[in-house]
Length: 575
Image 1 (cartoon, rainbow, N blue to C red):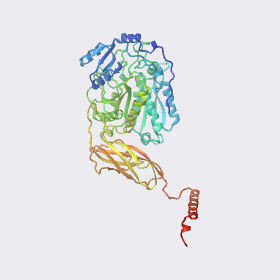
Image 2: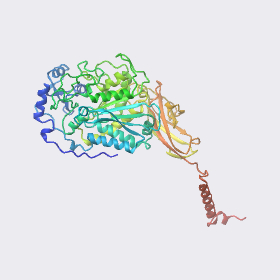
Image 3: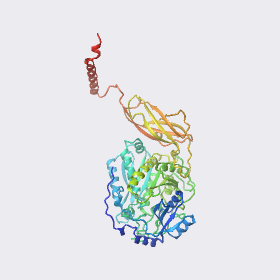
Image 4: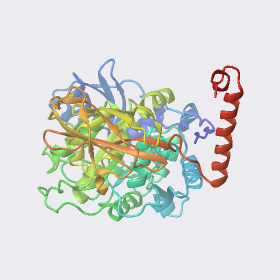
């Protein structure tokens, strides 16, 4: 499914939201000014980015500074952390304009694309109205909030779920397109890619692609808009009105200095926990599809076999973050959250870490998903700027994060267990199509090292076993058949494995071959799969009856032709 080409008129410069006049007005409303905060290394860069992402305008990695809006308290805190802070003399970054970004869909186009997915695959996709935007809720136009649910509806039963929210912060252009492109990838590759096929057969993927559509429309006009558009906050016509939806979630709301009570601030938390209709829609939907798997005490852990993964997609910073954000303390399932986080960060090559940064964030999505429901919850910060150029998105952000999202979908059944085990790579069959009865070789590599350890080390073990399943996956009581190490022994953390798959008992048609590996700690890793086509055996009578007749005539004709030809057996033998 191809993207729709955007065709918006370019707004005049003074309406694009970051003119000198607008910047001065915003600073007056918030009591803040533009400052450069210099960072000495990548770790401090990321911690400042996490803590001050609400006020962030750009990051200059070459010169080593962030440009952000900061009030006097922010400046004191940054200097107390030993950072150099300089006042910015210029008017700030130039305003972006959506017509220069043809790879990104508008709010309306996102809805049209989602409807097209449902129309093209009604047995795989459905669109669910989960709530309203603030403007829709208040009779000012606005939008419905829709979740696109993807799964093979012909296969019933309880299925593990991956839920994603995109576009919660309006100015982050890449986030909603990633959700849409991921959904298109799943639908387009179903029946073609074996991993995508089993994911949609046995799991569910839920995507809220435009979580803040009112704010997104402001950003589409070129404004550095972050919040929703609630006119009850700041002032009705202010470009700083609204609530920061990622500070409005009920878990930890208003605590720990992790948000602002100033209605004009970029991280204003709203008038109460879950006060905004967009937040209510996300909270209500998550509680409807995920069981509550964690107790109410801060020290309560979710069980090791807890199910479900939640990813809130933001930009920017190239980060994979997990709870907690409101405290430096590790979450009760912190070790398992870190393990999956490092696996995801290996896939997209982002910096993995706990979401605390230099200072707390409170009322955020990932803390809610884990704190309220015990779900393995993450924030992705895509790319290197809010208004990412299309070539960077299409060449880097999209392919790298498709890999990460596919992995998240794979492990959503047991996200606190499966990522500890080895991954299956380089999985292949000697032939993708064989006649029934002909054995086929299977090979793969099992790798227990695929973690992003840029800021720490994840435990690694030697591979201890590998096995394959035909058609029935491991979690559905399939029967595993062993694979052997190429070198004769399972004794390293990366092992090439092989085996021979007999096809004599398989029916004619296409089969799916599942492969998984186990390490010495006893952890089975994520399953990968390939398709195998089994054709009718060679020399077998064909069906139906008229096919058998044609087969006989063909054999007779071939025999007569050979006997009558020069040099044939008839010409050489005396009877």
